[in-house]
Image 1 (tube, rainbow, N blue to C red):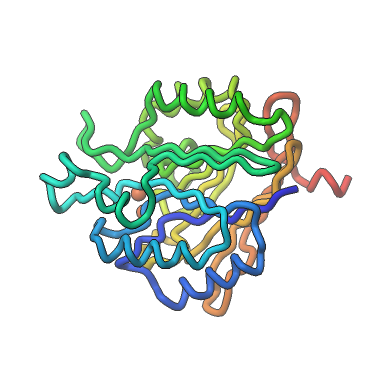
Image 2 (image 1 turned 30 degrees about the vertical axis):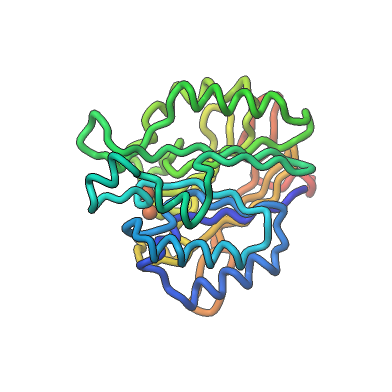
Length: 270
Ligand SMILES: [Fe+2]
Ligand SMILES: [Fe+2]
């Protein structure tokens, strides 16, 4: 089994410093094999917000995989949004927008679903395109057959019942069928500031709430603690209860042939 700390929507600029410290301590206690940050690191893509996010990431145990969200685009400076949209991201956080980390037991592939503009009125919605799918498939096919294959993207590939009026990432349906041959096991996302997990296209999708920001959408601050092997998975939504992060919900999944499915009990307990 490997352990993943899945954080999302930190939104530096609206963050709560006490929670940032508590979260960093909690993650050090967890000793994860991977820390995945699924976008919206800032509130308004200001340089000082990126600098604060970078300071926070430096406190975390490595390796850390980070992808951008729609809030990491400079929405309030149109010229910069269209001409140099990722200048401050690259300056403060990473030269990569779509990093890939291959560990002993896993491969984690980042995809940037944030877009400068779109044909629909809601530019915050995001998209995954055919080139990105091919990129993921190429990297995943080169991974060790026993590796857990993880995709990290900001926008959701699965909506909960409570979130059914919100949009999926553009291209989600085509992406899910395209990702099956790549044998992706787990997709990590955020954007909706709600924690839930389920199955889409035979793949486990875990959504994380906002880890440390004041931008609550009806849920306390939260992150996901995930234990995963090639055949079973446990996803704990860890919610802030004003003194610490505690398990609010626990979900189990198991592999059945090529597909994953929800399980009532941990496979190891049978
Ligand atoms: Fe967000
Ligand atoms: Fe977002």
